Length: 137
Ligand code: GTP
Ligand code: MG
Image (cartoon, protein in one colour):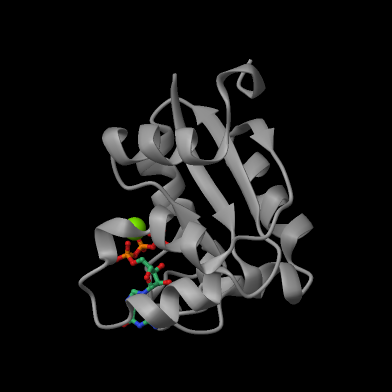
């Protein structure tokens, strides 16, 4: 099986959707390997999203990610990276398929409820950014 990294983003936590999102994730067959509640500084959000540093929305994105508590987590199942992206739906909720987490819970392209790693190398970086090895048994 494979591990991926996910975050319940500040909008979803604020709007009271954390439990419902975790239920969708478990219903889709993922095991929650590790999870915690925390808040990011803008600097920590910039480090996490460094691949987007040149995008025009980088300032807005990092300010939003630091705007309130989040739930970072490590998830495991066969084909976890691609399968989580399917369960999440498109980045912009207006384009997300019916039944996806972003269709149900996202507000806008910026405030889109959930993050999921997009490849094996980014998943490894993101897991290591938030969790120590001893938390990943
Ligand atoms: P993540 O799982 O969060 O990485 O989303 P994604 O992989 O579906 O999208 P991408 O990596 O391309 O963009 C990262 C994040 O930047 C998105 O989840 C959005 O929150 C944000 N984002 C992308 N495009 C825009 C935009 O045009 N405006 C704003 N404000 N945010 C954007
Ligand atoms: Mg992405």
